[in-house]
Image (cartoon, each protein chain N blue to C red):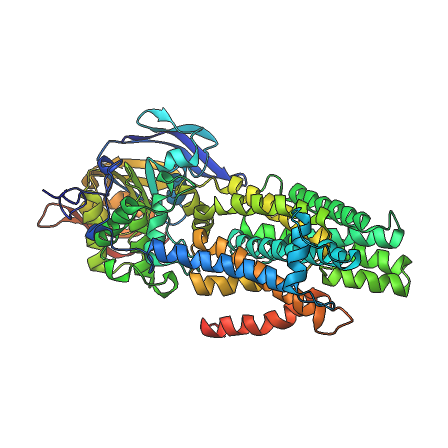
Length: 372
Length: 257
């Protein structure tokens, strides 16, 4: 005799505590589920992941110096110790030391920024939130500018170190100001804006007081965001921090959904609201700080990608966050490839292009959603 | 489950809101919480739902003090429905109701067949099955209110605490909701504005005035013309309907002397 569906209407009241622990198998009682089956979802996600892998591979070939498939294969073959003829050292170095880390960095930073934006939009219940809302990027700028202008170590690592120090300093100030509050949405936004303004003013002050034209130009390039400084050492840091941050945020998917209904309802669902918000602030600030420290404050990715992906896959964060990460990565990989060749031999800061490409995309999404 | 308040006091920014309230809600009882605006109903409910820590006094579930309980442990005992949890979410209605499964889910897995069956049952209970795939934004106030109640039911709670759940509902849905709340055997504490509705469906009433509990007992014992004049400042007449429940008829506001 076939097993009787446990949840047959009327047989057992599933809504009483007595029904807890009762396991229901798939059947007519379990109708409401989001459109696609688990298998379809898995295939779609796999395709998206393949699109990222394909984008990274294709983008490595794009730049002022053309790189062929065979060149790429020879570089990788050499590193893997295979029996292939090595490329001339200069070309090999261009591909291995500059191009490859740069493309990987674009993927990692794009994923970071998109996820940070998604998380902060939920935590602050503000559709305009982006990773720079917390003022971390302004702090990073101050640190970087101090290093560039005041010359506290002029190497690329010096700038990254200065930016990281500035970012952590500004985040420390933010947390100090938010200490003993409930971390409610409006307060996070206001405090973040205040901290950001303070550090923006400090950056301008340092620039105006002591920079010459050339330095200002270098600083502007950094402020707009550019992938050019990416090297293996910074990529490795990002490759460790980013996946951990994404996982930490993804494990709070349910809480992120619940926060939309306010502190009390979220807390009544068993979500430790203040602790969750604090954890998510630390995660997003860390991801943002690591990204900004290396490649500057690339705008718009963290604002538009969450909206675009929410439109495509729906708002539950369990699905939204992984897709946002993939979409952010693909978007930045291609935008940076474009930045390398659009005005060759001169390179455009990728932050300029993300806005140029992002604005029309954003408008399109808003219009499709009937909000414009 | 039994919900007990022992000498609860809670204040906000130095202003006392709940003052020295003691009450005991027996398992399976449906208790109405009455009082004019600002009498501390919402705050008392939040203290009892573990959402506010009282300044002094103790909240007990089945005799156990809940002061140090985690949000999750509390959520596995009681569900709470706010008066107006306005959200500009575009989650589907079924996903919102599915939030009620949060206290039972571990972080690594998504909703399973059991979760979906409970959500389906909860949607059916409040008559929203047809709107399961609708976006939250597209719901009316009353539909949102019913969805929140379904969300609370999906928690399979021992106790339900509701803050004016009939607010946005039409008469039919008000009556359906009250019948639903009284018919399950769960312990229910519900803040209500409609005194006759409270008298009709509640086993017992608690009456708050300026944060103090000034009366508690059967509807007939709590609702007297003198008390309504004192607490609500209305000129009211108490009669009994055909079913034996007290009915409040208002002659008008009580004019200041």
